[in-house]
Length: 235
Image 1: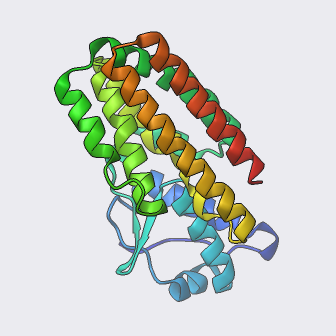
Image 2 (image 1 turned 90 degrees about the horizontal axis):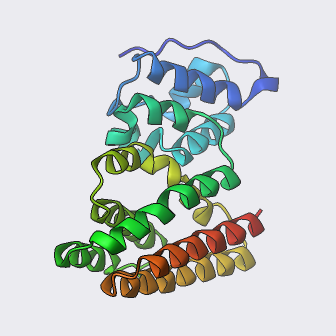
């Protein structure tokens, strides 16, 4: 499908590129799964250099709108992007504080319900999600998303489950911070964040095994609060 874009002036880069790509997706001119032109071709279409294109694509990937693979750059085809409300939220600029404020309100309650209603099968799914979470940043991110999804499933509330699925990508966009810093000191902090998160996950498992709703609620709150503080310190 041809991309209809307007050249942008240098003073608006790369935000103008980002906004145009968002609009193309919202208008249906770029659909989930569509492949974007190469960086060189995008540069020609927008009349900008490849550096500006790379910055824009990186920002779009960080909010989950596109995904970059060896085969090329594609509009994300995850389910959440097909949900109008979540899609609009993903396109807005959100802060770490806003994301974690939402997660505390939402996921603390899910943890409490999960502890009250968890089944042996739910617990097995959670344990499976945690397998291999120590095999690098990418593996941890996949494990973390799967684990928190399993908690939402175990809460056994259809409305909350659908809401969680709809905004899942928004809630986990903070994972993009893990790969955003290159110097060794910051990388060490990222590793500490991940190691603490792993320990918190194991504590949550114990609370779920005991079906201790109060404990699960407190551990989840502390878990999210600590990660928020650590991520803010990365700035």
